[in-house]
Length: 333
Length: 268
Image 1 (cartoon, chains in turn orange, red):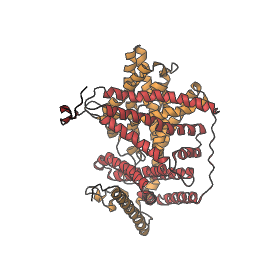
Image 2 (spheres, helix red, strand yellow):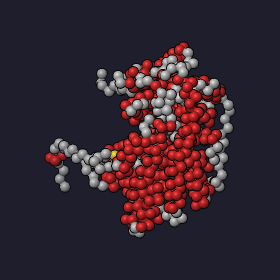
Image 3 (tube, rainbow over the protein chains, first blue to last red):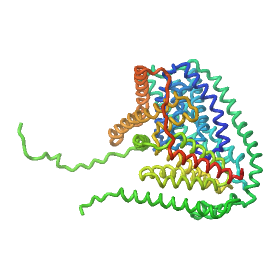
Image 4 (cartoon, rainbow over the protein chains, first blue to last red):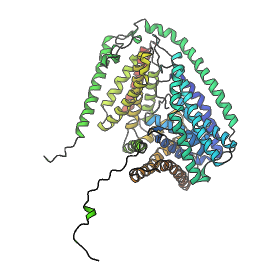
């Protein structure tokens, strides 16, 4: 679910960050009202918990395992606004220190996993637990909430992926970012999340929520002020507005790009052809398909490839030599 | 009671107990992923950085942004050259970590984008994967060569409030503290589950549950400790560093690469 760098265009990333910013502002304001300023840093502990939750592998029927994001669980335990901040901090630390998820794509990842997931999950939980007023109502609510939350997030991610090839292509019509259109991105994201990952999230949310409810019933945060309606309205507006924003941004980009494309193609159509080595294994030449690019002297290209080649050799050599050192000889001779 | 020197018969019999196999892959995998995080955090505890972290952070951010914006691959190859050279200079232990993570991300990206080759975008697989490799490498180099609290502290340069920086630091600290608690419980569960254990999955759910309860307790204790030490919600970061030669190098790199980007993309 963590969108890496370069799968979304910087423009999309900017739109998504702009979309998630008001949610952050709302969440911080809401949390500040409920928690005194001095207690704010304690959200860090919640963020650490949410970070660790993402590390857990959930056992699934058939012996397989799956990862859960756990956003709904955090929302059930701490409230959706605190969950939004906690998951955002966990995502930032993953992007900045662990290379998990892109830095530019941070806004998009937060929109999907720190906003949509916990808010949709919590909204569904509230709806169901209000309808069935018993403990089992809470568990059913948690399960359905987890399922709805992860799938809402996955669907949004699929939309973000899916609009890329329509908006951003290079001179030869090759996709610059995610190459899969909506017709591929939506099914391939949703099939996994409607089945395995959805199930992992449901198990993760329900089982741990049930454990905490049973062991320490007083600790779970019951926010009565939460109005599901306003959140639904917010989500509906954002879901409708964000793709529109993306499209609007895209046309502007396309218009700007038209002149640029001409200048790039005038020197050669290097970006358009299939690298010959693609089907028959890798050669260094395959990652340098465009040696002769407009305005770039051959000498520079050769120097550049020499630097890359030499650096690669040194890295390879050092990796091999470090592996050799680790072998200990335990024989008596 | 009469003592004899002989060993009882049953002790001489060779035991051949093979516990029935049970699936505990989820425990092992979780132990490995949490252990991985903890070992990275532990390693980072001894790292001392040279040069200003905000300048490095900005350089990396700009490089990643320009790479994402670039429409021809030449700029990316220039970044590749710089990144590989920097990796060459890393210490061996760190070098393996950076290359390992970045290469894994590269391979994953190649697999994800493989179908695109047959769907009319053959070049995308390589271009995007190389950019993914570089972005992950850049972040990894920053992460292994600088103390984490300085990296989060450097976010001040992006006007993030000090209270958030404090929260990031607490998160980092508690990932290690809570991770340790998780790890101990997971190992205990693994050691106690010899052969078939039907309660294994149920106990597994308790681990994160207990960690959550523990985290609530710990945060209450930390709050009390902070109050005792006079914390009133204001937090100031004192990070005054002198400008070093290495900072100049990074700034120079930044300027050169912005210039290169403009030249290669035909803006100049």
